[in-house]
Image (cartoon, rainbow, N blue to C red):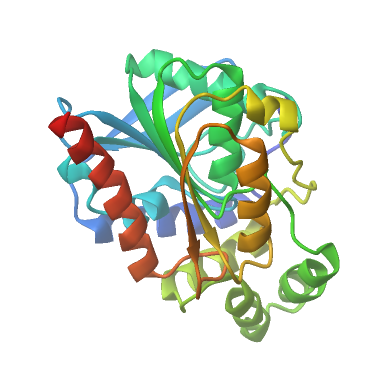
Length: 295
């Protein structure tokens, strides 16, 4: 854990990014409250919505994301759950800028501190991309308060071809940072997103220019750590995902996770799912609560 100088390159850039954060939250038109939690890694911002007597679900966004994006991805969960959308540390959002180590248990410890502070149990967790790594780290560290997890195109199980990622994702990103030409953001998004997303274009354009992103290679979970997890896992993989290829993820996951309950391969999806696939995932999360109630 290291607290560095601000990850935002300027105050102006930070304001522009957080203004888009607020814009997205306003567009959702939901009743919510901010919850601030002091963890040993820094203050964590959470957006809570849904009836507080409902069962809890924690939703975790991916890299270079924020809680309002996660809330938009699964908009109907608050009908049956108390939803806690977490602003991940050291990302372009409203949490502390402490960058945690992906290789140790920091993310698991951090998330368990949040769960303890919220005073919740039998927690469902749903996470996309880097959010999947955070959830698996949480289970490795202490899974006793977690009931079930849903991982969409998760990091930390396999990695894609680094040469493909370099040419199709990282070089366009770097070219945009250098030239500010929109065509490079468009190229990046065309590789990563299944469908065009106007907000993502605006938000990521600001993030690429004004935020110090983490380019550390993502580790993969050890077989022994995966074998120790007992919490039921539903894994949603994307067939055309350049970062974490779907077929490769499912092949390894089936070998290493004894608690794998359900797997889905989204045949036409790139790394970021489109709204109809997100709706399918959301339905799976909502169905799990209906099944619990019928028991």
